[in-house]
Image 1 (cartoon, rainbow, N blue to C red):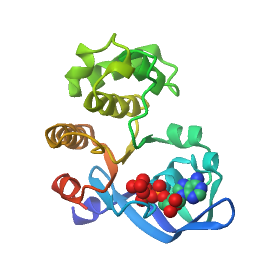
Image 2: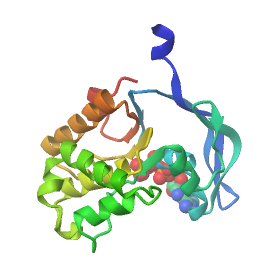
Image 3: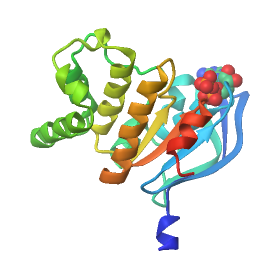
Image 4: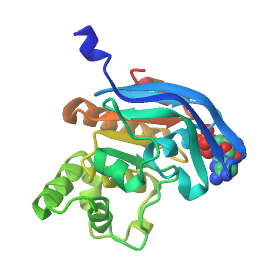
Length: 218
Ligand code: ATP
């Protein structure tokens, strides 16, 4: 039982990340994200937390960044350097800092967009129902333009959209940013239920250490 509990779903081993070939941002970062649990990565502004998530999800290159050393493995298989689309297909979804929803689309259209790797319309429909069961507020707002949702609702939508690719792992970048404590508690509570009931694995990046430590196991 002990061994099962300590299985790493995602591992980062000694990675070095450089922007523009010269700006050294991560210098030998290693961490394990345990399966079916919430692991939190804490750190001050500019410490390199978002860069760590971008290195995992494969979008570093869009900002002229690259992993020059080290490995990243998902269930033991190397994924470093793969394209974002392929990383998503392998089961990792990133929720960006600042809840970037597609503002001109409705809530439900955003969810459909999140299922871009899914071809089966039945699975897309059941994915939407699953998201609504965890985020009933999104169901109430399903036909509203998402640019007009509140900050908390947009954060819920960003998480819900990530769930639409049926990920094994969700990378959550500062979901508490700019939200009232009560809302943050509500959102973290839902994330915790997703972990417990759906077996989701979460890597949570936060500056709000007390909030993050209240929900994270590691
Ligand atoms: P925050 O909480 O403010 O998001 P963070 O810990 O997530 O901080 P990063 O966004 O990863 O930090 O940034 C780490 C460092 O890398 C910072 O010094 C930042 O200026 C630098 N950096 C980030 N993106 C780039 C880029 N595209 N080009 C050059 N430097 C960058």
